[in-house]
Image 1: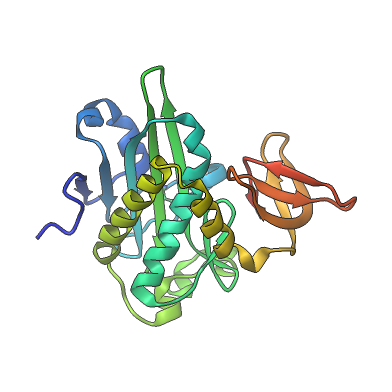
Image 2: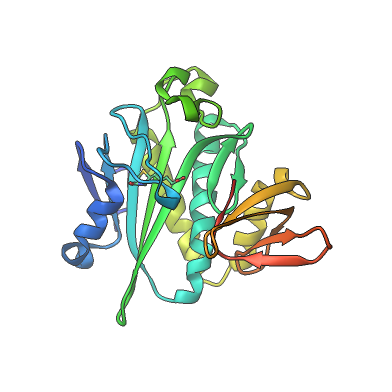
Amino acid sequence: MNPYPDFLHVITLDQCDSTNNYVKANHENLKDRLPVLVISTLQTAGRGREKRNWLSSRGKGLYSSFGFNLENSQKLNFLPLIAGIIVIETLKKITGIEWGLKWPNDILYKNKKIAGVLIENIITASDIFCITGIGINLNHTAADFPGELQEKAISLKMITGLDTSAGQINPVLAALLFQWLEKLKSGATKEIIQTANRYSGFLQDKKISFHYPVDNKIISGIFKGINHDGGLLLENEQGSTAIYYSGEIV
Ligand code: BTN
């Protein structure tokens, strides 16, 4: 039985440089077969946000990218939050464990990162094509992470002691992604924001540092949640609140 939604075109690769690159490079050919999910068992050049690498060895993690059209560019702000929400809900469904969302879409367990999302959009006059790449650390031991990541990263196996296959997780991710995209389509942005704020609750009113790429600055402030259209609310020392739509909490 096909574990995926019937309308989803699934491409399984033994290896590639990056599943996001694969979707991007094949965008023209895939146009008539959307939505698509590209899964790879390893990536030779996995990419993270802000030009970082994403550790992508065989059998250790999940490396998947969804490609789909969005009908309205105003909805783009909500996509990073939806991606974070579906990873949290998938991992919760499989393990029963609660996870934290660090705006916009890092997934944390006790302050260590287990999963991340890289969204890349191709916007033309005729359509908005979204590539949502998801990486989840599954079967790494602490020693599998290079020195600088050992303090910051964690895998499912390090938490549960169990091996997990990407094949168990991808169908759940897919089902949840299209459920949440339907909600977005129907205008349920309030539910998206409420859910993202609930998962980010552990940061509420905490002092954070934030990397703002527009002027490449680190800004400190108090996390005041996510606003009605997906922006990060940061209160400065003077007590006024600014909204940011790009960047990440560091
Ligand atoms: C981050 O937190 O920095 C984002 C990590 C995203 C990694 C995934 S793995 C599948 C897809 N292909 C890539 O090259 N990157 C994303």
